Each structure stands twice: as structure tokens, then as C-alpha cells.
Length: 268
Image 1: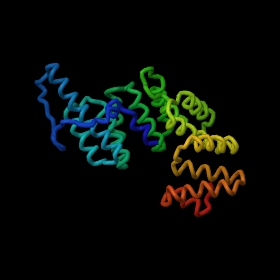
Image 2 (image 1 turned 60 degrees about the horizontal axis):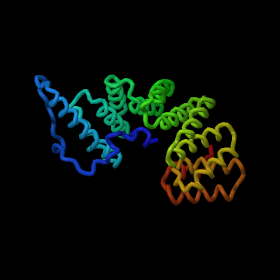
Image 3 (image 1 turned 90 degrees about the horizontal axis):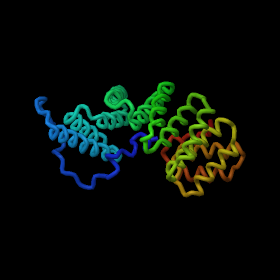
Image 4 (image 1 turned 180 degrees about the horizontal axis):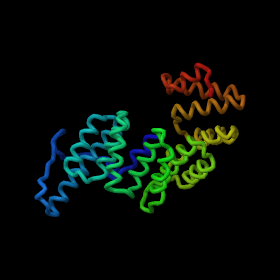
């Protein structure tokens, strides 16, 4: 769930239409003897600017440049937790999991109660098969009254609970996310996970109804959601609806693993 891990960083929110920054690859080194408030402010500003750039490059899919920008940010201010957080996300996409884990831990050592870092690290742990370790981090994020998007942490916690078979907690987390969701995208993310949960519970009618709600809202479904919908219709014996969703999957994601699974008839 990629949008959840980037968080809507305050750094990303402005989208940085234009920035005057140091040349790419420049190293910012501040002698330890320089301790004025102005110097501290300057190095933090440099770190923030380059972290903001890194987040933009991350969202644009330019991982090498994003990695370079986080390195510049950390060279400017080694105590800027957000830079380690974004670098951890970059390492994750590059499948450099040891580096990602180390950076998340460093970020949390600098800002242990930061809700965004905790949510991101929880997501990382869940994706790495360390689900049991992820839940405390989601809870830290959720319980922080200053967290702007706790519904994202609820969705992640619910998704992770499904993976470990804790379906009761999964439903509670996802329904809470649905109640809190303030935009169509978040509603859809919560609904997709609730469809997955209903499928696991054998509640095919509920799964189908939730899928219909998303589609009626005009949301373009990702391949995993379309494939889930195909399997729901298959279970219900709705052949025409199954073929309609399969046609969408072929049109939108012809090279996806989900479409290949459909072609092979591997519905489970």
C-alpha cells in the first residue's frame, strides 16, 4: 500500500514548485564548533529541503536521485529523523531491506513517538513477514493525537491482522478506518481490505456488495482488487460478472500476475 508508507509528509504537501538547493551530490558539512542558533536552523533547513526533494523523487519513481537527496539531507543534519524515514522507504523499494530496517530504527531512535515513522515501519515489518512486531508501531501511530491520518494506520493494522489470521481485530481496525476516512481514496483502501476479509470469512455477498460500492464511486481498481472481485463472482457462480471484471483486468493490467493467475484458472 504505497501511498500509506510515504505519508502525506508535511514536506511533500507543498510539492515544492521551485527550490534553490545545492547541486545534486553536494555534501554539506558543518564543523562541530559551529553551534549558533542560526547555524542549527540553517542545517536543519538544508536537511528539510533535501528530504522534501527526496520525497518528491520517491513519488515520481526516481529512486537513485531520491537516495542521493536523503544522503545530502543526512550529511547536513544527522539528527533529522524524517531524512532517515524517507531513505528507509527508498531502500525498501530498491529491495535493500537491511538498509531500510537500519534507517527506520535510526529514525525511531531520534523520534520514537513520531506517528508517520511508526506507521511506515509497521508497514515495512508486516511486508517482511514480521507481522507480530508491526502492531505496536501501528498502535503508537494511532494513539498519537497529533497524527493527521490515523485511518491509514488502522488500514495497515487491519491488513496485517488479516495476514496472521486475526480476523476479529482486522474487522475492527478496518471498520474504524472506514468511519474516519475523509476522502474517496482512503475509503477505497479500507473497502478493498474489507472485501479481502469477507472473502476469507466466506461472506461472498458482503464482499460483492462492498466491491459494487467502490465501482459505483468511479474508482479505478488495482489489479489485486479486480482479481479478488473475479474470485468473489466465481464463488457466487456469477459468470457474466466474472467475465466483465476479467475483461477490465485484461484491459488495464494485461501483464499483471493477477491476470496470469486468471488465465491459468488458479482461483485460490
